[in-house]
Length: 368
Image (cartoon, rainbow, N blue to C red):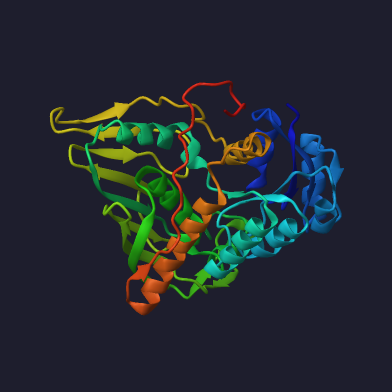
């Protein structure tokens, strides 16, 4: 079976792990070309990863008949323009999270993909890794009984102390919910099903931030998005979940995700990773046990969702990190903001279909 060819728009910080995995791990996809507004970045990627083509701009990339999928690695507020243009050009699209910087953008992207009969997918794909896939198996096999609740926490003091270019995290399409919420919500939906309503509170605690990372040390950022989100979700199944994400708090850790059941509690790995550890508490044991991983892809396997989508194009099956899922997560994230602004519950209208679990065996880098 021939490889599916990928054209990448945007060669910033996140592109490195995609390029590494596409060129060294996943055997059924290949990068045929890249472009970036900063040409030097694209030139560096071409040289480092022996990429055949360097495009002058994204429109030249879209016009290349060899490109099967456009991988959109631009900043969140640029996702809409790039994905829409790629779809208009007849290309399948896989985007970094979020699908769009607003629900309206996501609706238009999803509608155009349906109209054109094109596949749409997107990050995060961490839920396809060994950690969360093992957790899904544990829940489905009854290790915690009937799930009754869930809680996720992503607590940090923001990105301006370490990120080389942190400004966009505080602009349209940024903030802790749009940045980190996709990891937690995608994992929760994969483990517990879709969300039906959200009730939340939000706050922009610090209207201005000072950058202390060396590249822009001393510069200030005007904050245009909420940086403190806390709220409750009702899942379609009746399960009640909570989610807390913030860029405002000093905290010794960062992430926590827990699933509560009638017969035990499951401590899910950091959903921004592909591996473990997984821990399980059952009353008869009286202590927390670490559970071995029983699925592949425990290392940083970004592009796994892209490879799965490529296989779906070849075989006609549904892909797992699909547009229905990414749109549902976007709708839930915007509901947190809308509920926080209105102080009213917000109903979720989208209903993602549960996709099959990853197979526990197989050749590394080759999808089912």
